[in-house]
View 1 (tube, rainbow, N blue to C red):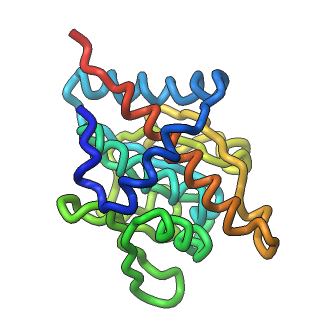
View 2 (tube, helix red, strand yellow):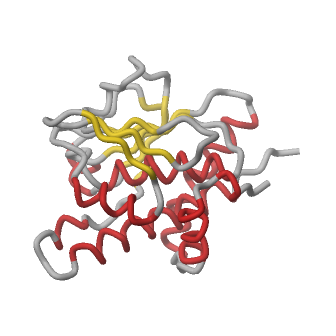
Length: 210
């Protein structure tokens, strides 16, 4: 059952925009691979771990982790979402600003590769976000997980993701392409909304088989 009331009010107001975004059929086919994975794990009553991966773990993978965890809460799907890369940089401040504008509450700690605690609700734990390699996670070694490849470079240059029991490419255009332009803020919001829409599609389609 969909429960949007747990979200902060500004985030609740974002949902109508997110729900109005059209998802092309070819994107739905890729997303439905993730739907199938989560559904099968849930039906077998197994723990579900999703690791969103891009090269620098600075923009797309962080946004996807945040929105996936948020949508999982809305649709009452018990998953643990992570993100990582193949190089350490930092969670880009432009992406942080984009989610703040959309209604997430963010606490920052540290200077170099700062840690961010991203909150979407007073009733759920914060999401711990910072740049890291995919197998370096805040709670230690990951159990078997699905690796969701959110950028072409990581997908094409990482033939093996150690620990992944499933690999699913769901690539997004990098908003970094618009850094320093007049479209910068617009494109970060656009990418965040696209990711939100697609994660809503995934978690709204998780059903327990009868």
